[in-house]
Image 1 (cartoon, rainbow over the protein chains, first blue to last red):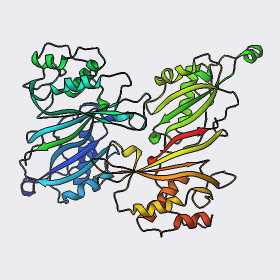
Image 2 (image 1 turned 90 degrees about the vertical axis):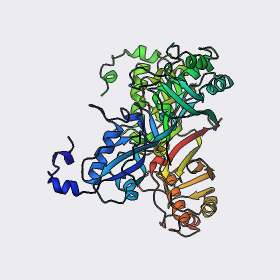
Image 3 (image 1 turned 135 degrees about the horizontal axis):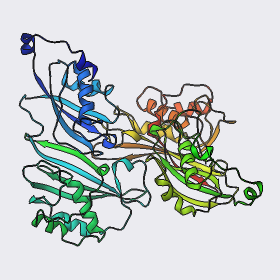
Image 4 (image 1 turned 180 degrees about the vertical axis):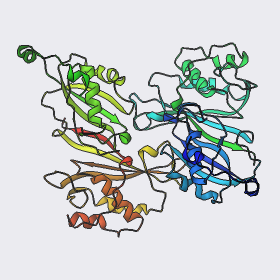
Amino acid sequence: MPAYLRFRPSMPMEEKKASPHRRIKATVQYDGTDFLGFQRQPRGCTVQGVLEEALGKLLGHPVTVKGAGRTDTGVHARGQVISLVTESSIPAQNIPVAARSLLPPDVIISSAEDVDEAFDPQKDAVSKTYCYRIWRGDVPDILTARYTYWWPGKLDFELMEQETAHLVGRHDFASLRATGSSAKTTVRNVMEARWVIKPGPRGETWEFWITADGFLYKMVRLIVGTLIDVGRGRLPAGTIKRLLEEPGSGGAGHCAPGRGLCLEKVTFRT
Amino acid sequence: MPAYLRFRPSMPMEEKKASPHRRIKATVQYDGTDFLGFQRQPRGCTVQGVLEEALGKLLGHPVTVKGAGRTDTGVHARGQVISLVTESSIPAQNIPVAARSLLPPDVIISSAEDVDEAFDPQKDAVSKTYCYRIWRGDVPDILTARYTYWWPGKLDFELMEQETAHLVGRHDFASLRATGSSAKTTVRNVMEARWVIKPGPRGETWEFWITADGFLYKMVRLIVGTLIDVGRGRLPAGTIKRLLEEPGSGGAGHCAPGRGLCLEKVTFRT
């Protein structure tokens, strides 16, 4: 138990009732390499755990952080959104800088603002955007190795783009998720899915961008692994279409590693 | 002392003489964040130490690695060149893949080849190229934070380019190096020094590329810190010219942090 919890002074009921309850919304970035994912676990270092400890110290009371989405072990975020309730009077815009010295270098609070107390980063999110990055150089590149999946082998890009087009729309992704998720439905609406090739002096980076109203457990990584397996001829053309038309039939490709994945943006109702 | 040194069997003189002495040249990349620089230290983790341990296991005998240049704590490399002598008969081109499982993920051997036994990565190097990266976004970017210096404030780019032009040529860099180096002369020949602006959706990265026949202790970081200090109006225009014309007079800018620096390439006599 962290020190600030252990020594928290007990508070009389009247005073507790009188304290203002501000809700703060914050955008958070993290390098997921050394974390067991976002969500707090009984053991191991998580982004939520690190944020709650730092923000607890900053705000002077125990803090519960809620994230817009869970990310798995090794998955990064540049646009995770969290919310928390505080009794502190600190101006919200001061939180990013004030938290910097309390957070490890692999977790950054980009911005913070006061929001309506009813704000819920999970329920109010209308879409999330992920990017999966594949490094296509002949040799690994140390400056991007933590954030990309190195795949130097031959891949049929046009075929992968054709497969990708089938993802857009309302589909049952039961064949493109890992077991272990507690989702009530496996139907998701994919608003956008596209590839962007970024050239560079040492090789290309292939970025797979996908926006949906929600994602199932390991869904993006299984989609990318399946697209790669089609692109290298291990799975036939039309695999994505078949998997979506016959949910639960199985036959997806490999699960691409977490390190290539990044939660880029969460969009809310305006 | 690592196990392979402790239990090395003693060898009769005849056999030792008969063993072939191959010299291997290899290109190495590393993420310097968690290393106390390249060169082996009495205490602490260094790139040389990690390479010697992994290559010792791979080649079956103690290995001494010599690098083309030392890099300081936190400085990265995409094109460091090392040499070593081995008695092993492993084909050189197999070394990068064979060493992968013996090396930590932040050190990569990109390529290896047999070279003349006289090859010396320090003495035979005719030039080295470094890149210093500055992240100019309003907010830090977690995917580049390990490899860039975040400087969101105003900088006069044109003025910095004008200062940079004075670096090219043969100059005495006594005012642009840190004490503690054992260099015999402080004169170096800068073949190229230029800025490249890389635009991106979240902000620009300013890259400072410099090629010289050699570098003094912290020279690139002091040059970049001085250029920034001129660009933000903390030092007057003409500072670089004055520092080079009056070596040892002092008055350089701040020392930019190691994390932004990367040894990109070492060029040898052909």
